[in-house]
Length: 567
Image (cartoon, rainbow, N blue to C red; front, side):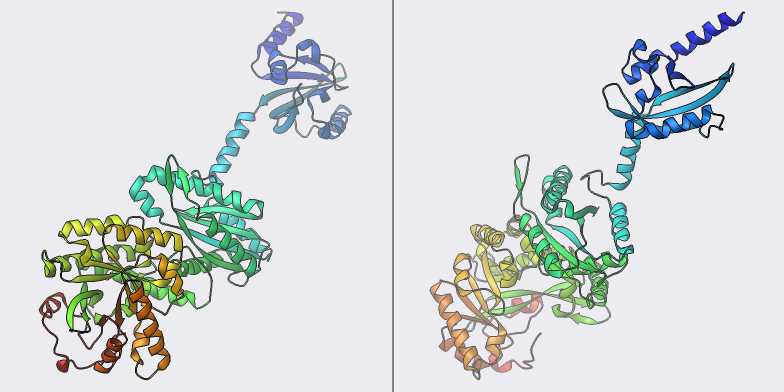
């Protein structure tokens, strides 16, 4: 086969190749380009032959390319020969795209030539970008994932730059999952992933750290006042319902705040500090923020250990309800009981609530134990009432229960399960918890009253409720804190406050129960100022179920001894 025929075959082969092929001369002019090249760059063959190779090179790169070709044409060894190199190329329409180019050079009759194979790697680059994004971003929300967020936080701390970390946990998210399913829960997380960046903008790095926990990094901000303002804005943003496919979902948030370098100089340390603060915010009933304090570390560890032991206690049946009688002061007739949880600890004996409630109220376990308490109290109420509804049982609500959208459903289920009339049950909530989010609290309390269950404000007078605010709440009972009763005979101010509370309660049509009555003298003063009912050691200690049932006889006050304070 002669040379011309071989050259023609090589030319035809190159022209038919699916890879883009190009040949340029020593002056940089295009002497050959196959159809694949023309298709890739958007040219006809007649448009490129004889044109400078810079036709496909972005302007910013042309100087370096021209200098490099000139050096090679002058005899310098080509550094890129035989190597696949990724660069940007220019199409006819002016758009840039990534290519992989492999260069070859040769001389023919003393003339310099260069040829190259070119591949469009746009899809590969896009795939790489997607993989990188998957590696650094949460696939559900599109926010940074935990690894990327912690990397960004670590980089920020490594240069000793001030910053603030907000650790955010959703209040009520588990209830959404349980009620509407995980698909709705995922949609809700996605909605949060949209709302947070929209509100905070470019001034914050935001990540989903896992489950319903989010991290917000306020860059270059170490001012507690600014951090407090941002946390307040986030809480306000969560007061607006999330609308998802016809559902309007109420969702709150709790926030723990840690400031670098004050609260931690490394990423994990700062995150742990924010987590301690978040723990405290959840303990306040949610929908709140708290700053980290150094004392939280040891306290938090001890409470978590207590919580773990308490979880085992629930499953082992070590928890028990005790019942303290509530009496009509005029007749000393028992009208009901307050249900109080006790822990029959296998080693430490009977533990009072003050030992374990602080740790219980700061966890999801509170809800589980709270529903158990509600059910046991309804069981007791059904047993002592039969069908006549003579006695009521008061049950204390944990903050987590009060925030649950399932509260009314759980109460109705317990009533139905035990065949109990709704007026035999009363739910007690502290004014601090109820007033933490007034609008939501109002809706919850009204729903409870709509099914006929009583609502009591517990320990009234020790929180921050204004007297006028009580007019908005659908209460049935006001419980006067034992602190006012203790010195009611010796302290004119305590007596005056108690008299005012009783008068106000009477005007509002509420029952008034004075707590902590220990002496007949205290009872006499309370009767004189018009208090209807009382509770305290004068009438009986918290007692086991069997003893409480047996106590439904007239009380012999002279037999009551040992009046030490319970708490």
